[in-house]
Image 1 (cartoon, rainbow, N blue to C red):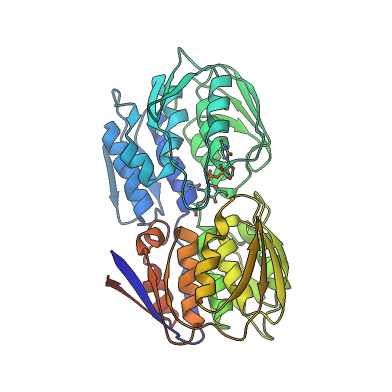
Image 2 (cartoon, helix red, strand yellow; image 1 turned 45 degrees about the vertical axis):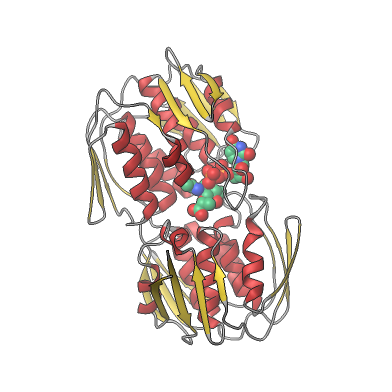
Length: 417
Ligand code: EPZ
C-alpha cells in the first residue's frame, strides 16, 4: 500500500503534457479483438488500467506487447471468450469486450461488473441492446453468458447517453448483418476516437460525434495503426491544479475543443484561459468566485472533472452550487475534502460549496480515481502536510502523477504505508 505526502508548494508554474486518453484506449483494445490482422496503437498511457486490459486480452489468448507508449496486438483465431471475475472486478471497463466477442466469436462469458465507489454502474442498456442485435443473453452465477448465430442490425434507442453502452453496441454493430442505428448515443470524444479506430479497420460508420450512429455491417475487419487522442480529463486535472494554486500552467498534447464547457466554467469562476491549437494555459488574475455547475454527458461538464472543480470552488470568494447528474455516489469525496477544512454540504445529488480562506493538511483516503486526484490538488494548497491514501486508485488513470505535478513546482512524494 502506498500513499502520497503533499506539502503546500505554492503556485504551480510551467508546462506539462497530457498522455493518451484512458477512456478511449481501453475500448480500442477491446475492438482489437475483432481485427483480422495486427493492431498498433500509439500514445498509450502507462497506467494500471491499460495493464489490466492487457491482462484481459492475454487471458483470452491474444499476443499483446506494450512498450514505450505503443501497444501491439496480434490477432488470434481461437481465443478463450471469457473474462473472469477477478479481472472485471479490478476494472469494469472489461465488460466492453462483450460486443466484440459476440460479434466476432458469437459467444462470451464475462463476469458482471460490481458497482464501485461512485455508483452501481449498471450494464442493463448494454445487455438490452445486444439482445436487440440478436444475442441470446443470460445472467447466472454472476456471469453474463451470451451466444449468437450471427448478429442482425437493429434500431436501438438508449434511455441514457451511456458511454459504455454506446461503445459496446457500436462494436457489436460493425459485424452485424445489415444496418444498426444507435439513437441517443454518447458523443464523448473517446467514442469518436473509437469510431475512427473501427473505420480504420474497415467498418462503415456515420454520425461519429453526434447522438445518432449509423453502422452498416461488414463481413470482417482488418488490423489498423492508430494514435490515441489526448486525455481531456488529465488535461483538465492539470489546468485545475494550476488554477487551484493560483499559478500559471500550460497543458499540451490534447484537443482544447474537447474541453469547451470546462473552459467556459473555469472562466466564469475567474480563471484566465489562453487556448492554442493543442494546448491551454491557465492563470487566475483576480481570484476565484463561486459558480453554478451541473455535470452532463458530453458536451456537458464532465463528471470526471467534478471532484477537481469542487476543490477549486472550496477556496472561492463565494458560494457555489454543484449538481452531479451521472453518478449517484460521486460526492463520496466531499467527506474527505471537508477533512481538509472545506465547507461543502451535500443533499442527494446537489452540493453547496461555501468558499473558505484556506485549507489545512490532514490524512485523507481516495475513494476513487478522480477523487484521489482532487485530494492531491487540495493538498497542494492545504497548510502543512496532507497524506493521500489508496494511491492505487490514482495510478489507474494518471501516469506519473506526482512526477508531473513536481515538474510544475509541487512537493509530492510517494511512500509505502
Ligand atoms: C465511462 O464510464 C467512463 N469510463 C467514466 O470514467 C465516465 O465517468 C463515464 O463514462 C461518464 O462519462 C470509461 O470510459 C472506462 P456511462 P461508463 O455508461 O461507460 C448508468 C473515470 O474516472 N448506466 O456513461 O460506465 C451508470 O450507472 C471513469 O475515468 C446504466 O444505468 O459510464 C451511470 O450512472 C469513471 N445502465 C451512468 O449511466 C447502463 O447500461 C453513466 O454511465 C449503463 C450506464
